[in-house]
Length: 88
Image 1 (cartoon, rainbow, N blue to C red):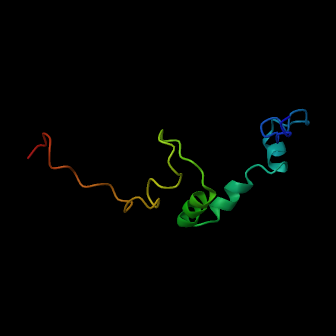
Image 2: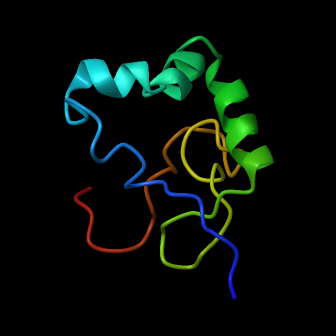
Image 3: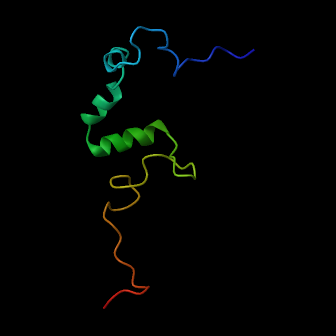
């Protein structure tokens, strides 16, 4: 027999006003957002990398690796390509 799983989605069902923002906040909602807003962008990226979250880009790669500050580049857009039909 499998051990009892932690209820995540349904744990607040049946509680009065469980669908309200006030109830969500009372049950701990938005605490991680508040923590992230008090951190530097680099600290947020480091926290995501440390958590070992997987990205949703289709390849299942690690989260926190793409985009500005993600460590995969300079955070600047790449220079224009020299190929193709560009106007002189």
